[in-house]
Image (cartoon, rainbow, N blue to C red):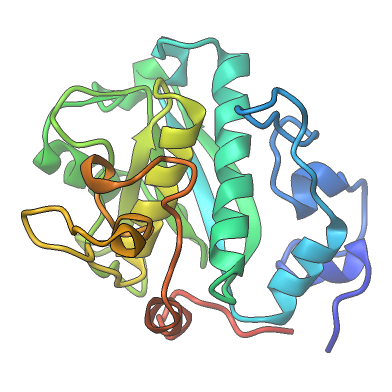
Length: 250
C-alpha cells in the first residue's frame, strides 16, 4: 500500500495512528521537533513529509538512538541534540540514494550515573561491552552515541550486525557527539553501513581514485570530505537492502 498520511506513516512504523502526533519528531525523527541547521549555512535543512512516506514504501530500517552520558559531553545538550538531528537527516538522505529508507527513529538515554563509565569509550572491547549490556527490545537497530571516545577510532560496528537482539553483535557505536556535525553524522552513517554488512572499500592504504575516496565506506582518514564522501555503489545498495534488519515496504 502507499503511505500518504501522517497516521498511515505512524501505523507503518508500529507506533499506532492515534493520539497527539509530532510530524517532525515522530515521523521525521528530529528530537528537537524542528529541522536541524545545516552546518555549512546555519539555516534549517529542507525536509518534506514525502521523504518519510517514500522511505516507508520501500525497504527500510528502524533506528534506536541511545545517547550515553550526554550530560558529560563537551558540548551543551542543545548542541548535542542539534548534531544528532542532523545525523538523522544525513542518514536518511544518504541511504535514500541507495533506495533504503529510514523508518522509525526512537530515542533513549543513559545518563552518567547509570552509564558506569561508558560515556567515555576507551577501547574496542569497551564499545562491545556497551552494546552487550544495553539493548532496546524492538526491531530497531541499536545505535549508541556517546559523549567521548578516547581511543583512536571514531565509531565502531560489527560487520555485519546480528539479525536479532541478545547476541555479541547486536548494536553499534555511531560516534562521539563532541565532534563537528559533519564528521559526527558521516561516522554514524558509515557505522550503520558496517552493521548492514558493508566493509571498508579499501585495505590499509587509502584508495587513490577520487570516486573511491568519496564512498561512504572509505575510512575517515581517506575521505575527501565529511560532507561529500557519502556515496554508495549500486552493489552496496543491494547489500544493505538485502540485510535481515530491513523491513519490507508498505
